[in-house]
Image: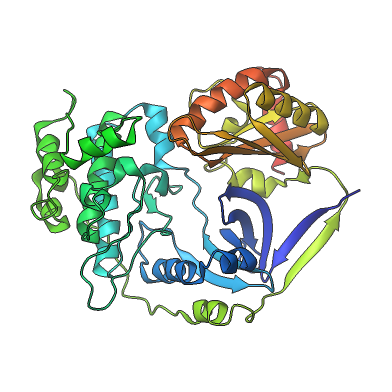
Length: 447
């Protein structure tokens, strides 16, 4: 019988997994000294060394420390145990901007402009520090509890090398990448980021991509000549600005200063007030990476009885915006996030068995361990991997929450998957009736 392990890393009590990628997991955690919620990106040293990623990860962490800004996810500190590296980040509770677009189909021009203004402020700050993001897209734009933008995921960011003006690595998501990046020739990181910002603005206003083809060669052809059209509801002002941003020639493409002077952009624009420049200390980064075997932090484990992880009331509250937990119980809503949850009153083993059966019927490979199930298949859109992770948590006696999140693949594809998946497991999803005591149950869980 295996035990469930609850960990403490330094002063942080580590909880559930809230994100999962090829090389890292992101865990929810709480600072036991201040009570502050944080997200901890956990990476195995063996993986970093095996894939020769030491310089890349060190660069990503250093960049996030350099670019401190109200519209950029904040990096607090970096820690290491004998086997792992822990990157402690600001915990952002408002979800992805992508989810808001899917939910509303498209945003109003005023709302889109507000997010675009915040995005341009954040990107301009990065560029002023010599940092180019290179993977700007709605999925890397988070929202905080106040609805303000938070740029994340600097894994592909670049700092200019001394004496080198152009970047040469082709990276990013194809639909958002500038034509000069796809060409394989050297490119200006600032101009490439501006192009991606233009594609994001288009998606916010239209609800779909300006360049979107299943065949990559056709997609590249359209991007290379900026072959796109603006729908009828775009105002003349934003149409003119988009044409200047999505200019296939990086030499004549509008720059950030030009965007900030644009009449459409300036409407209701309030430049963010930055605090005085903080002294950025990279000592913890150097300590972790200069000698990857040193600078250890205490990593403690507490053994618990075998069974699903128990989620306490504090964690339940932090799953939602504010104190509104209704999203955990309402599975009839159309809004499907990249990370989605539902509640069940069936035993945990029945939940797992039902998930496995549904996944197999959808042609997915299934791997289950300790009440966590990974579903894997081939992405229909790009021919790469598609993967989903589900995990069962006990939130009260005979009441379980199932957390489902995309681990690999396209987010739009995940939205389609989840709706189909929920239809197949509908019998285990609890849908409380109006006035059935749901309010009292929530009150019990949050006491």
